[in-house]
Image 1: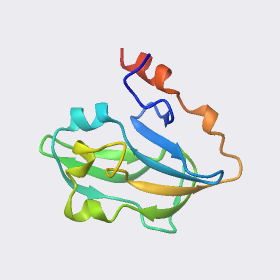
Image 2: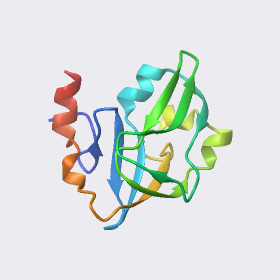
Image 3: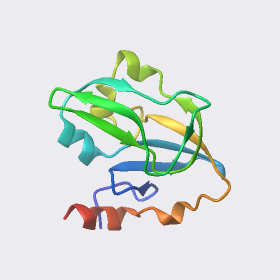
Length: 127
């Protein structure tokens, strides 16, 4: 049993993916990643309409410790970004699986979310 939400999929780069419907997913970073970064003070997200590819950097998180890339765990087109993070980037630390989400992607046709890690596999990776 892991300490990570079971309804999400995970990337090796510490992003999570939540399926909203069959074609759009919401993406954020895991609580583990947020804890490792420390207090997040600035966020750069991809633009709505921007194409993102699995594994490619598409934004940045700036914390009191460092600047880290955000990697897209899926390929598709950005359909929404969390504009609340501009004024309140610390929401990523306080609620990484809820209000601290980063962006949404309309998936490319060939994306298989089963290629991502489940909660137990992600927890094993961290062990």
